[in-house]
Image (cartoon, rainbow, N blue to C red; front, side):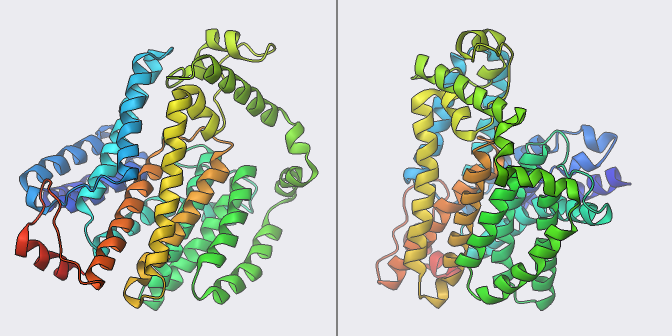
Length: 446
């Protein structure tokens, strides 16, 4: 039944993408992030849906090139492209080419999707549709995990959908922490009381699902996210009151062995365990690889080479072990240059979002920009905190957030130019309206 519903859904929506490439983009994001085919069997589970949808969207974009806006090559988009190209070079010289090439292709597809977001999202309405797609993609699994935690009294571990980039419990907690701020944005800007209440209930279940992962890093990220959500929110009193009332209830609901595991964060026993020691050893390995191969690193999957561990790992470790940190993972796999590009992307995205908030502050017409930029900053906080102990450096959602950050800066600057009476200048590029048509287009969009 699930397979049939999935096939009918695609058959009903994919033809629309030929007429409107933005619909194809939403489907592309939905199937890349949510992975609904992981919930089906038979034919529906075997079809490469993402490839099919991506192909239709690209063809539709070529046919309807006039519906695309030009890519504004700001620092963030240049860094994204530079990182994709640089990792291609490091992959060519990688120590584990059989692992590296498929993962570089995956990263390249992730960045292609991010650039199509920049090409096709040209208004607040489309941005809100995109944010809804993000939330539906991830909150489906988060709410499901929260219900699972409630039903089983928190005695079983919550994990994400299998064979995805957030199937592991720690990765799942990270993605749920990054999704919570976007749900708060939609809650603040929804006109329907039922939608606001539904999002509030969904956020509560998401928190339960994060607790149910038993991920220590996830709990630390959740604590920071909840604090930052209150700090960044307008109408923060209600959110603060709900957090103060509901969070202690959720913590008391979890069983004793959950409490014992989390107690290790306070007592320091977590740092004495084998899991933490394994992380430290992988960080030592990553540092040694980067010091001996500073320009290109070891390429994707350098940690899976027993020979590399023999040469650069601690003396008592001689087998491949994933590098549990976004920072050390990129350092080992891409070297100093790739690491610098990676850190710069995060830093520039944060600065762009901060500038958007400064430009939009106090303007009723741009309050959505102010809120969304602030909540995406919270998502980046969740990523950097939880990701510091996870091998999750290249996953889909991060680069999609980069694309959104670049677009928000663009919207804020265009709005500022319009308010100052500056003439609308259409930059040269594929699908850009020119002259009077451009001016009319921007007025209609605003």
